[in-house]
Image 1 (cartoon, rainbow, N blue to C red):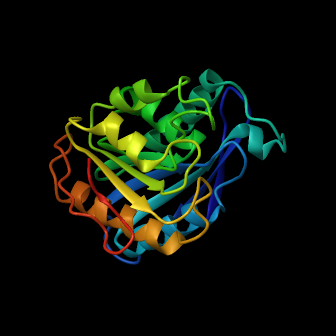
Image 2 (cartoon, one colour; image 1 turned 90 degrees about the vertical axis):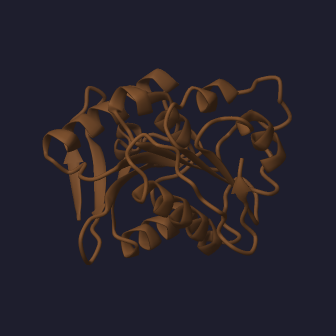
Length: 227
């Protein structure tokens, strides 16, 4: 099911995937700057999270709905995302623990807005720690500013930040967990492993009191460890 949501930047689109049974929480996912919510990793996480009892809301930003090819500046992305989440909360769609997240640029948006939106946790797929070959342009502050449980699923060959770089940033961060999975920034090689890691981490969030650190133990072969 899809629905359009009006924002100050034009309509956004939300795709709703409901679980078969009771809703254990709500997962809201945003897309990257180069694609929509149909990317392999987002599709796999959506299917597996819904099978685990999560209501999954995939948010397509207004610039994508309008058919534009270039994403706007981060403050505009945050504005559109915030308007969508506000509308969904007003419609009582954000039931249970609220996890916000997404892939790449969408993960950055989720990190920057989590506190203001009252999220209980943040899920990042392929967080772009820095532009390729430019580690001095780090976005580590966006990760370290997240004050709720944080899960990061990162490809072992991600040129935007390898897992060891993310581990250095997240070490000592309360409630932060890092999973290493096969592949690069696109996370196309093993989307099933990406989803396995994400759902393992979500299970910890569902079992914790909102705002408490999620305790996770990894997601099996090819996936990682708490930071």
